[in-house]
Structure formats: structure tokens, C-alpha cells
Length: 530
Image 1 (tube, helix red, strand yellow):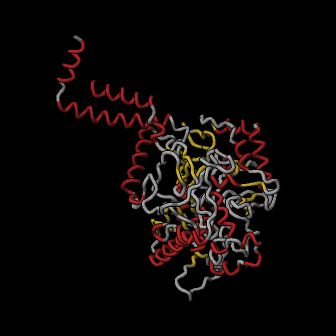
Image 2: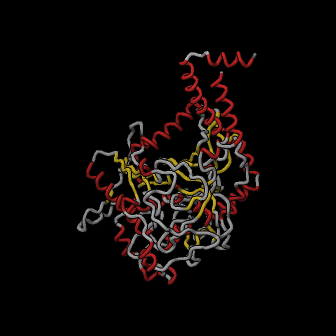
Image 3: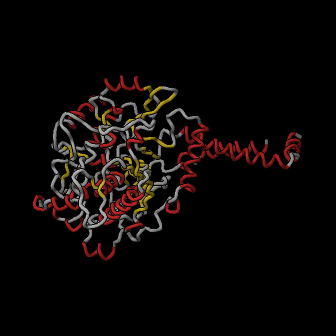
């Protein structure tokens, strides 16, 4: 009797209520998926990077939001992100969850059973061809100044820089998508319209670039046995073999800004020469793009405060008006290979010890977190790293894949500057040598051609000269290419593609499991029937 009355009630509903229920069902399903995302967000699957002309690049875990937004606001942000990626992004036709249609066929894959060895030059020339030109890079160039001639020159130089990189790296999956902007840093720093005088630090900042997003991933066939997860910049990750669900690749691979207040030199023809007070735009653009490809370190003073602690990045945010900390980001893949030059031990091991402190993902008030860190073993290790990093020159280095080149990273005695130290090669060691490009200080009055000529070949060892066919008479020296190979970039000397597994590679990994599907089914059935 109850059953008959029940179905009579359901079938008696007017037709328009079915449409209403369908719409309500769809909307509630979206809310359920959003709620499950938020609940599961402690294990993040993407880290977005935001450039800041006034300070260090900001990191944000996605989909979690720590800045006090409501769930509805967070839902709007995610929907807007989907719109921008699929509709609003001018390069959406180049985005895909799999390997791009331009990808070259039959590229070597590194496996534990059959590791790929370096190939001979003849084999490389005949069989392996990376993407070149516009197939390798697509640039969305935004010029925020009124001088159209400078805009045109800057865009041309930026394209030239991207093309130069495609000559030395094997870009298998492309195009690499870049969002580049030429804008007055003074105007960015003084949005209130106040004056930007000649001594303002923003005038001295030439440019900045960073991966648009990074993804936590771990090696599937690690030669060193390290299966911990590290953050892989999106441009690099796309070149690798992903042995898992694909992540939610973002609209761009690299984000870059260049300062329109700088007196730039643009190479228009062979008769132009750089003036003593000019900086070479091509040099700076190429330098910054290399950072965007993954030449970046996570190490910095704790919370960017004046503590004598050096740590990987902590997850910081604001909840209910209070500063909170929620554990640690994974270290960048670049950090995996940093060694203590005197002992040969890896800095990552000290990083892992530091990151054992309060890494459960729970929100902790910043003051409480700091009090505990000061007294912890992790705090002691962080002090040791700081003391090492500020002890002088040639403290940290990165070994090449072939174990024949050691590259020293920039350090400064009694001082640590985030972004400069450990994120560049040593300035003094590589001045007047072919590896000038990733030094931290960009000289005035010299363009790339001048520096190539000054990069004396006679100073190099036989090991440095071995692969000169890859870099000779270019802006890319043997040490820079060795580091890019080490972190995973394929080159003609090491064309193999590493195999990685992305951690929490997409929303589906967080929401598609038995209990969540049952929950959604029950709620959907209830809405349809009642």
C-alpha cells in the first residue's frame, strides 16, 4: 500500500517539476564534488605560482584555498579557471591532457629494464628531431606601454630567445605556452599613482619568470632509488612519460614579466651596438625562460622572515583573520640534486628532516607553529643549512648525469638572498666563461654576442669541452646544459624521457572512489524521487 501511494505521488508530479529536479540535481552534484575536493585537498595535486614585483614569487596549493574565501567563492574561482582554460585562453587549442599532437614519434623512454644510453651524433642527426620555432614555443605577449616600436622589438627578441632554447633542448611535447608581459614595474609597485624615483628598487629589477604551475610527481625507474615526490614545473613534466592519470595542465607553462622602465638594448641589425647603460633584452629573456623551465630552488629563509633558518617552502595562508601554516610543499626537482660540495651528501636529506615538523596538513596558527619549530630538531637542522649556505663560496653543487661535471651554485658569505642564492650558478666561477647565462648578475653594456666572445674556451677542462657541439658559440654553456639534463630535460646528448607518476594527478583521483560514488548516487536518487 505504501509502495503504491509512493509511486502515485511521484508519477502525479507536473512535468515542470522534473526539469526543476534535474537542474537541482546537477547543481547539488557540483556542490558535492566541490565539497569532496575541499575535504580531500590536504593532498594537493597542483601548486600555482604567482609573480610579485615587490617580493618573492607566491605559491598556492590547488584546489585548497587558505585566504578565507567561501565555498561558493571557491566554486566560482574553479569554474572561472575551467572557462579560462577551455574558452578564454587563446592557446586552448594547444592544450590537451595527453601528449601533444606535434610530439615526435619513437622518442626514447628510460626504464629500469632497458636504460637508454647516450646516442651517437649520427644517430641523433638521422632519427631524433625536437620541435623547433613556433612548434616548440607559443608566446602570448602582452605589452602594457604606449611605445609600439619598443613592444614590437621586445616581442621579436622574446621569440628569438625561445627559438634559441629550442636549438639546445629536445622539446618533444609542445608547444610550450608562455604568458609574457612588458610593463612598468614602477606602476605595478605604485598602483596608487605615487612617484617612482630613480632609487626605487623596482627600477633595478629587470624581469622575472617562473613556472606557471608545478605538479608533485615521483620517479618510476629511479637510478638513485629515490621514489619521494618532488615538484615538476609543467613545461618539464610535459616532456616526460607520465605513468599515471594526467594532471590538470594549466593555461600556460611559464609566466614572465619584464620591466619597461629599463633602458633595453634590442638587436635590430648588425650595425646596432649596445650602449654602456643598456641591458640586453635577449640575454634577460633567455635567462628568465630557463628559470621558467625549472632552474629554480625551493630553499629560502623560513617564511621569508629574518630568521637564520633555511628551509624548503612552508604552506602559509590566512584562516579566520589569522596567519596559519599547513605543513610543507614538496621540494622542487632542482633541489633533489643539490649536493654539499665538501662531503658529496645531498641537501635534500636535510630538507626531509626539516619537513618532518608538523607536516600532517592540519592548520596551525603561525605563532604556535614557530614556537614549536624553534625548539625542534627540524629547527636545528634548518640552522645548520643556513650556516652552510652563508659560509662562503662553492658550498653547494650539482653533478652532471655522466658524473664528469660539477657545477657550483651561487652563495654569498654571511648573507642569503632568496632567488639569487642557490637558484643561479656561481657568479665569480663562471664569469668570462661559456656558462655566463645563469649567473645572478646581468652586466650592462654587453650583449650575448659580446659575452660569447669573452667566454674563453681555453679556460675549460677536457670534460667541459666534450659536448661542445651542443653549446659552442651559443648562450648555453656545458654546466647549464648539464643541470637541465640532470633535472630531466632531454637534450641531443641525453634524449631519453624519464618515467614519472604524478601524485593526485587530477580531480578524478580525489572524487572517484567507491564511497564518493555511492554518496553521489544516493543523493541524486533522493532528489529525483523526492
